[in-house]
Length: 153
Image 1: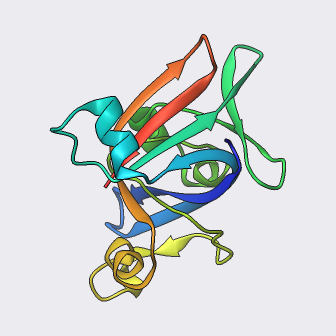
Image 2: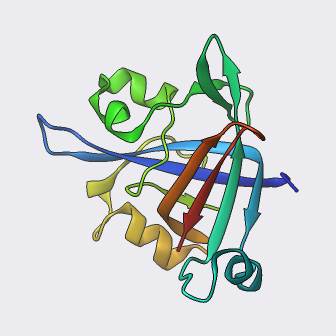
């Protein structure tokens, strides 16, 4: 448990230029469940998700933080607040939203310009990589056992 490594890609579209970007965050020590039977057992027969991701967090000075694979502390912010930040802050914060996706693997290429890919970067990843999941819902932050529970398909 909590032994997987994923890359979470946060989507951002510039209001001034209209350009779209994906900001990657490589997280290790997460729990990724892709067992359809386990997901059906927990969420019932109507569940259409293919992945369940648990991401631990810590609280520092009243802020929820998530540590990436390199030990960098990333403050978590709700998705609407994340989009309102200045561009320089996007790489140094993290959010979980239905505009995000995650991939079981380690992205080493830095931020991605969506327009560099014919049908967009998410489509490229989904067609060329295994275990790529679009976020469908986010539970948390849960406080008893500090974590987020993210479902994807």
